[in-house]
Length: 161
Image 1 (cartoon, helix red, strand yellow):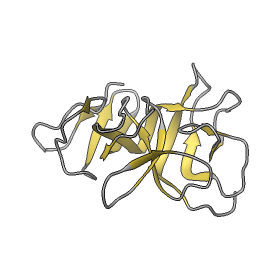
Image 2 (cartoon, one colour; image 1 turned 60 degrees about the vertical axis):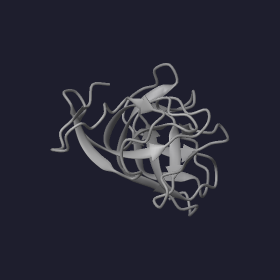
Image 3 (cartoon, one colour; image 1 turned 30 degrees about the vertical axis):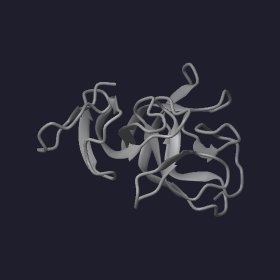
């Protein structure tokens, strides 16, 4: 991924960088642009164990904590831009075309996204209450990942519709 920061803020780290030192207030948001994927929006959060680049997470807006996306989750959702594990800090995409997000083997292009029993991944199999709203597949699967269209995704444990 070649997203480059387009904010006026000086010194913002690379979108794919993970660090052991907190560089910005948790919840900081920046815009970055990629020549292929266009403009995206990213949020700076605290990592969680087993996160890989492309993992789906839910996050807390008050303290920046993340949890790998799981069935019955509630809250805002983002996609990790790096292997941002526990006690590390990094960027997560919340808006725009995401180049690489974890999906299960049966996921098809243009499908809605649903949380699964595989933490941090989505599938297109309809599960009532587990739809990741405002997220949609945007490519075929490649190595367990697919492109996504994100518009501030969230889960509310509501109906599948």
